Length: 369
Ligand SMILES: Cc1cc2nc3c(=O)[nH]c(=O)nc-3n(C[C@H](O)[C@H](O)[C@H](O)COP(=O)(O)OP(=O)(O)OC[C@H]3O[C@@H](n4cnc5c(N)ncnc54)[C@H](O)[C@@H]3O)c2cc1C
Image (cartoon, rainbow, N blue to C red):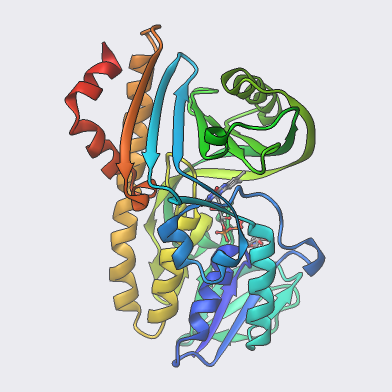
């Protein structure tokens, strides 16, 4: 089998790693529109659960930090602290990890064609032709679309997703004083910085952190607001902004990820956890399903269906939570709710976290009263 992959972000890279282990695959060719010197791009915070980390090949070599608490606040003064077991959440150095994977797949015979912008995929007999200015008559048995956002080729071949893009921007910041021990272990999130947007504070070393926002419009002004919110909340000062970068943060879920022998993965088909916009959880699962089952697409389609259902539930949950918070925002009293979560996998399974929440009526009461 000859496989084409359109786009060499983390989705394309992990899919090709898993394809290399599949005995039915003869060649893997990646078409990437950017030139080599502009890749990998810095855009993602790199937060993953312990389980997702274990599913991403070589990610454990690039761990920067680990966290045990997630503190979710609203601008109106509600604080929900989720207490996980130690070492439940990790931050990986995404750029170094991607560089490492590019070297591995190139060494193992994957052909990477840089600077090749794919403009379409068309059926040619019972195979597929990938179309582009410098691409001549290359035929493939299966095509994987991992083009990220916006989903141009995905749409043209009939892949479908529900999605709402937010503008994401992040700053690496230097703090004027050291973070306290518990602060280094805590990820902070503010919901509602604009109507549906959110902000995050991710501690790095004791004086470094990342502040990010995902909002509908004017992300740079919301970034300034987020820095002020976190300075006040954590009692610290941002001394210097060291770097600023960003991308698109999606909310949504895939609807159709297999059309005949064309498969979609990652941001191209909105494979994201809608509360956080995190893509690595779903990409780590789907890439393995595709890699192991590319020669039996019926099985791949069935297995990926479970993931799609989970992501759709998470999207519905996100809508419920944002509506509830709007109701709750009428209450001006400050509230702090602490929920013991224990299991690291619940960092990815938001619906189960809500169930944990609902199981404790005294906590639920505190939310509204
Ligand atoms: C600010 C920010 C913070 C984030 N933080 C987290 C986090 O902490 N945890 C988490 O899990 N997720 C996070 N995410 C989401 C995560 O980064 C994405 O879900 C993930 O990177 C998507 O990868 P991808 O490979 O699907 O798409 P991309 O990374 O967008 O890769 C697509 C590739 O395809 C190429 N391409 C596009 N069109 C064509 C074409 N026509 N022909 C050839 N090549 C093409 C592009 O050049 C690109 O290289 C964050 C995102 C942002 C923006």
